[in-house]
Length: 233
Image (cartoon, rainbow, N blue to C red; front, top):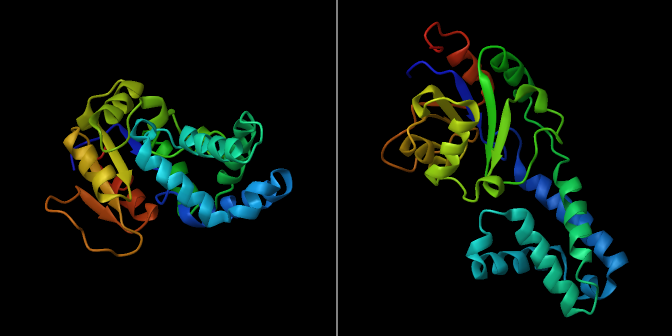
């Protein structure tokens, strides 16, 4: 890899496993819905609520970059359908976001962020709606760019451009780190950034051109970057 000055991190499935978080959040939210909006709870289980949101995602491509608003609108539709106040969708989505931020970081994450933040500027760059400040790890980051704030989601080059602008660096000076081969690795490389694939499950690389490097966890990333004399320009 060429020398770098900053690292952008994907969040979901890179710093923590996302689907246990979503499953737990949706189950807890459904329990609340059963109490507060019993007609919805009687007709829709947690999986039904997810299917409803997924159908809306297909119907509303304009919301593809904004998972928070997508989920709020899905709540709003159900509230209207069963005769409840549509404005309650805002409180429902806030309750979901509280639950969604109850994550368990992979054990290698905090030591890696601590070590890497001593040498590089770190940015959070995510298609999701996690907030590193809300998660209690904001002290390691110079800032964050989400698909919602950017108006587009990875692998669109414009979200990577915003990350570069955030730290006022050229794309080649930034290393993007993430778990998704297309959204993270290929998207970053096409935008001119370097990229490391975090392959925690030992999967086969599914595309032609590969990442600049592959690691199984962030401890390996620290070894690759912090113990390398040529990693900083």
